[in-house]
Image 1: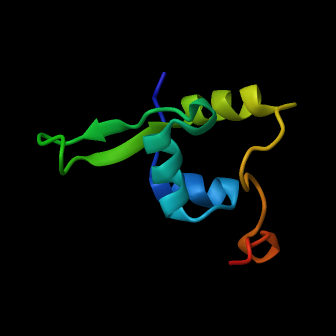
Image 2: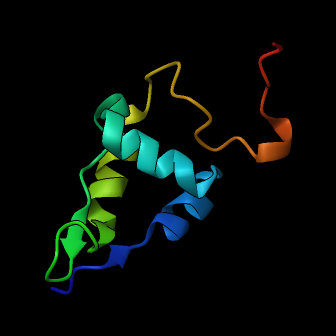
Length: 83
């Protein structure tokens, strides 16, 4: 079986969020977002990739969970907080 890897851009397109949101979720551990694989010899400059199966499992686990920030909401429909 081949493992399908996704980039931050792939995931952001799939979920309808901005690419930096994926980094933030990964860094902050939001809703148990899967940790990325680091592809490359140097961890600090390695490319971050996610297993598609991990992302799909994460999405399945979120079904029925409320208050997941912006998943699937197009950027034009997101509510902005007023300062």
